[in-house]
Amino acid sequence: MLTIDTLKMVQPTVVKQVQSLYERERIVHAYLFEGDKGTGKSQVAQFFIQLLLCEQVEHNEPCLQCRQCKLVMSGNHTNVHHIYPDGASIKIEQVRNLMKEMKMVGREEGRKFYVIHNADKMNIAAANMLLKFLEEPVGKVTAILLTEHYQAILPTILSRCQHFKFAALPREVIIAQLTSEQVTKSMAATVSLLTNDLEEALALSNDEQFVQMRKTVLHLIGTIQQNVQESLLYIQEAWIPVYKEKQDFERALDLLLFAYRDIVALKADIEGTVVAFPDKEEEFKNIALRSTYERLSKQMQAILKAREQLHRNMNRSLLMEQLMLNLQEGYAFV
Ligand SMILES: [Zn+2]
Image (cartoon, rainbow, N blue to C red; front, side, top):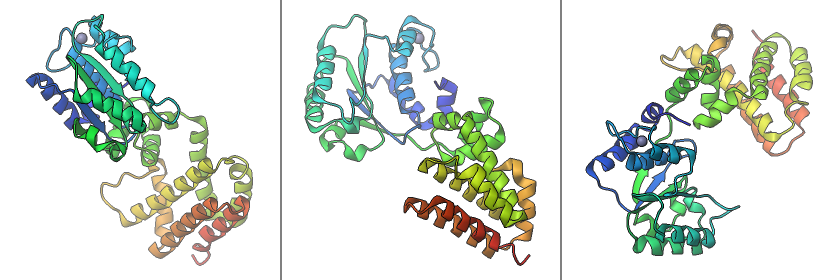
């Protein structure tokens, strides 16, 4: 769970907008939080709800200590309901039950909330039911719809919601967050290129298989500089039998691509570039010195080609052997 300070760093604009709603006491019946996965939508929803229920708000922030704040945090507040897709969609029964709940007299004082997660997954019947409710709101009830695909929501529902756009997390923010969670700077630099979902990035940083994958790719770069036989042996040992799942194989290729991108960036000496493998800067600088842009570009093309071949289900040993030969080729004339 993100702290309020983190939330303010991750989504400064939205958090301020929410605080301003609270301050001006301008709470409407429905809000739409739209943004990519991992941009903090449900965390901001919780912050918003706590802000409106908290018994001792200070500086437009919920205290997180009072009974109300704690109940919201634990998911046990009787005024707060969440709906998630049941299988592939959100069904009419779910919305119907929710509306019944909203019409009942609450056990707690104050405003009631419902949060619809993946609101774009409402089927037509469910969406129409919700629409009816939005058209005739009862009492102090507020809906928060969360979505990654707002275009998939009925325009009639959209028009009844106040819209909040969640920005994608800048890479620096992800790196800063990860390092504050004891992830090394090098690892943070790598995973922040693979995802801008903070939780996923953190999980990846602590995933043994991923840590090993990173090592394998870096070792492979070393062998590519030495001789083709060694890299061919190494992929048969440490790559082909390990990355059986297509997505792991692809991810390893992506890491390889990032490494070459680093080498290009170091060669060009682009100021302010945060490379993917800061721990390999010296080694990569040496490679950069011995390479030409043309060569590096061909190597990156070769990796992209391998990626395509993977998707066309080409034999993976063959694909990797070709890739090793192509990567090596650039160095034959050094
Ligand atoms: Zn509180």
